[in-house]
Image: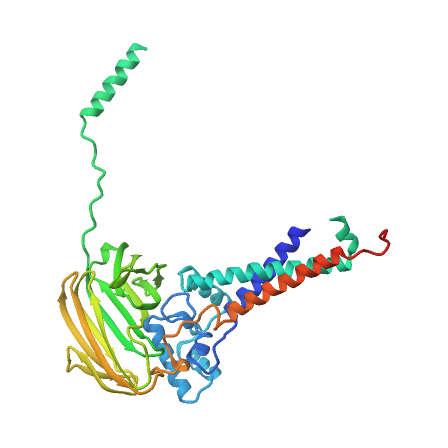
Length: 147
Length: 255
């Protein structure tokens, strides 16, 4: 029972933390990073544009910067890329997951951040597990007595 | 039995007179860079100097192979070390930056002859109304047939100068650049570019909002530390609560 609760806690925390990292955009919408979070890298690689520093990716980011300065918002800029470059400019959820996984496996983040990520997942897993066990002890005291 | 021993001895003697095959690994032939372009952007989107180094080794058949790139010792952030396939695919490499007394370096295995490195380094401290004066030293790890160096003039500067001086200047995306094209650099040779200017403000040329060179981190600011701290505090509270709940006498307990 404990092992199942722990495994579920781990899965929930990992899914939440990974989802936050993959899908949540911490940059403001009206910034180059904010817009490039929604676009694919044009350099024939699986990256999300925000992680791409190659000249082909930077050219797109410069276009985003120009459009923002011209007063366009995120949706307008995304539509511009869709109209000009087609569907390949946009990201499906699966492509986004693949792009972010690629960014991790290529060592795109500092070791310190990766360690912090691991620690957060570990401690939040333990916290969630403890909360569930505490709730179980309160709701079903007989189960706690049996332990 | 004696026959077997004799046969074994004969085989051993025969092997002793046969010259042993040489397993010595031939040293890799030295490679040379065909073309390399270095773009130096002081105070572009941060108080540091952004450097983008891209190029192509002349002999594409010599790859994959281990190569070394020497970088300035003041590197604060090495963002990308990548190789590019002929189809344009990135193959970014996991790297470790090693520091020596006067420089830093990375040893990486490049799958293809095209490479791309970008990093930030901080050769000066940004102070308001001050002269920024630093020298970018390129230490060529390999012979370079053609080296192009582009130095971006930060916005809002006075008396911008690069030594050696150049007449080759151009404008691009609202920035002025000084350009150098140097042929036939030998391996081990050093090329120095002294960049000097006066700047009143401390803000970089490009607002973070419009920067194409930023990299998203896993956590923004201190959010990672806050998430971890909150979880640790939560674990302590829950552990205490569970202990309290266990030590509380249950109804019906004999007292």
